[in-house]
Image 1 (cartoon, rainbow, N blue to C red):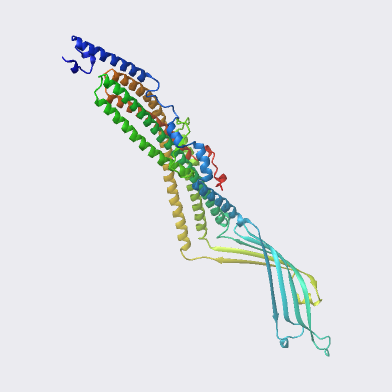
Image 2 (cartoon, rainbow, N blue to C red):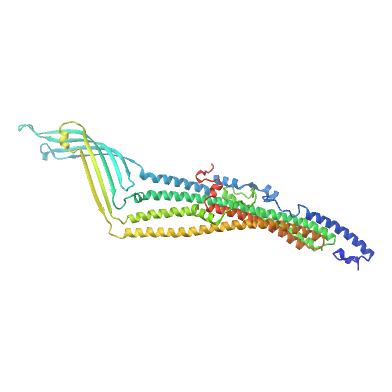
Length: 542
């Protein structure tokens, strides 16, 4: 056998030939050197070492991007996010609407000034008869509506009067003459009205106020929900960015391992342990990792734009680098606790409850509209002459010192419009009842699903951490076997891919756990408090 036909494994050499024995000793020396280097490399801490949890980006990425934390993004969103600015405006509008609804219970100042004059033909006026009047009235007071459905008005004023009359002659020979008298009368008046059937009671009389307050509370709840939804999306977007950065870090580690494997493969080929094609296979893996890095950088750029938009940051191409450690949350939830909290404090449930309350008010008003209208009205007035220019004023005036008036009116609709309106209101409330029942099922299902996702993600984290350790040990053993001629580059790169996939599964499980907790906090209404966000405190920076 010729020495040029030596097999790849030097252990199979025919050492009987002196020439071959020299070649074999040289090959064994090279193989020993390569094997020692391979063992040292494979067992060194730097080879296939798992990146520290939380080191979610390489130095190159950190230098090229802007390092941020989740708390910083939330604080920036509070100041700059358009969505949170809209929520703040809605909250202010709701607060003002709620205050405006109290106008129905306020006292209102009223004032009135009027005047009149009358004149008769003197030729037709007999003695002691008035043929002309000049009257003026000025009054001021307060009025308000009552929670019983009625209203009350209290006024006080003065009346200025001047009367022209023809006086009777003192004797038969005298001639009747014209005379005038003037005076000032002070008066106080009390008026009240009260519906006895339709419109009676605070449930109907204050229906508009209740509806306005409920609408204001619904708008405020909507603002809270929108703010919580934005924070939830920002939390999810941030940790998806962290996962993308972790993917980039893993692919960069894979590229480094592939480059290292190329160098080791070249040494093995020179030693005759591996065929020359093994170098090409290693270089192919380097190219594949580089292509994956480009895709990772594109994903990071897109996700950074999403996070920038949610936080209200300037939209630039510079990537964001998450600065928070990627680790599993310590929160523990049970399905019963999550469902109960979501049904009691969930923002969507709160909005639906307020809509149901408004529908109930509309039903009360519609049912009241079917009753006949029976209204009672009372008024009383006290007059007193405070000054007079002549003794005849009191005789001309001839008015009582006080007066009382009462009236009762009835109105009854005989059509079917009121009955139809009541039926429509009841149907709308029934529809909202059905929607709330369906919404409660959806919220409960989402809460249970989030709890299961958190529980399974926690289990996946434990398994993935073990898988990373095992995959790393298997990779080192495979590299050592490669240098001993007992393995190939195909198997080495498969083991490298196993390590990469184990790391990514660990990162994915950690992100899923964090997002599950964020969803649970959103469903149970505690997400804003968790991140210290108050809608009423939101302000846009100048």
